[in-house]
Image 1 (tube, helix red, strand yellow):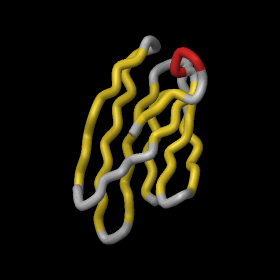
Image 2 (cartoon, one colour; image 1 turned 30 degrees about the vertical axis):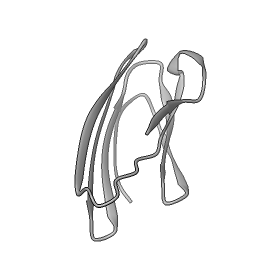
Image 3 (cartoon, one colour; image 1 turned 120 degrees about the horizontal axis):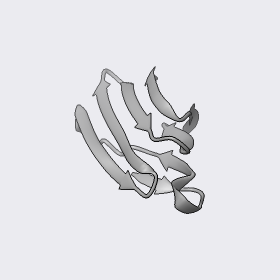
Length: 78
């Protein structure tokens, strides 16, 4: 899920619960703009493409590990 950690979505936590899904893409609309996420899960690895609007930072939580997210495009394979 995506949840705000600070008022007005200034900071968010993204913690996908994909289960058996191999792919998931969604848009979460906030007062600061759209958070866009796309995940692919294959062979125990997660590929993430996350776009945060101006003024939003946060963290991606995957397998109990936090990965820092900055404003703008964030791409990672973990």
